[in-house]
Image (tube, rainbow, N blue to C red; front, side, top):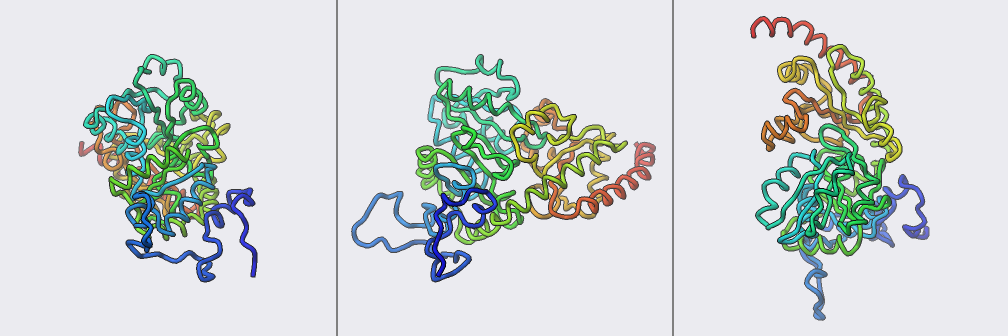
Length: 403
């Protein structure tokens, strides 16, 4: 019988994604953790603290516990918590560190769901906010108030792939005694590990890269133990728990994270370089490109720039829709991070909840296309794009005549 190694023995993330957090000893010798599809567990007669009762809604079944240990290990966090969705992770984290009368600083370009939560829901809890330019630290001081308690940013913004001055965010938060929160979905732990960098809480839509197979919705909170515990106690009451079967699928999907993300990093850079030279493309947003305004910053921070890019075509929305109707390999769907290449127009999907004025202000045009690169061969995707551009060459003059 082989001995069971301690998590601390795993020095590299490729080993951690496979072995960290696994039950020791293995349950009845099972190499893959079983699904504990039980809503409740025996407590005995001694009683105990409410939040420690073994119950699915309290996110503490064996499937949850294994995930929590693995996630904390991957990013160097003290603790971790899985949730029923990425938005559950985001909303619970924000509400657990802020209370009535508090003030939040938030990056001005955010995922649409987060933007809506900040602008439409926080005031219902008596919480105020201000947006900041995350690449201009000189302007942050004027936004700080005596009641400012937290600062919220994204590692790479959705869908424009801007990279915040993350070093300054951490320093600013520490100097002003703010809780620093970052959405690390786009980078994944393979490319960036916020707790190791000094962030208090790192959030993920685990639906995306962590799971990687487009078959569950889940979220994750990783970071300081006291803050994760606060989030857990709030989540226990909000009810945003993750089902054990979804836990199992997330646990399984994470084991190939290193393989998937490294390949997606390489493929996306190749496709971004191709698009940046194409005659029909007016702009490509990808931090791995030399011409990206935060390229040097990104290469200093990240092991790779991820599997998402966005780009704009000449003539805007009409041509963008024609392009989506012409490609055959990418699936037109509003998510990212899976093994399949997905393509979407954010103005009509992820950011449709924002007003047209707010989208325009941030640079999210009606013709902006977001591409999430999967694990297909990038040459096949490029060839598919060539055929789509050929169709545009044929159709656009006709479209202009009709207009």
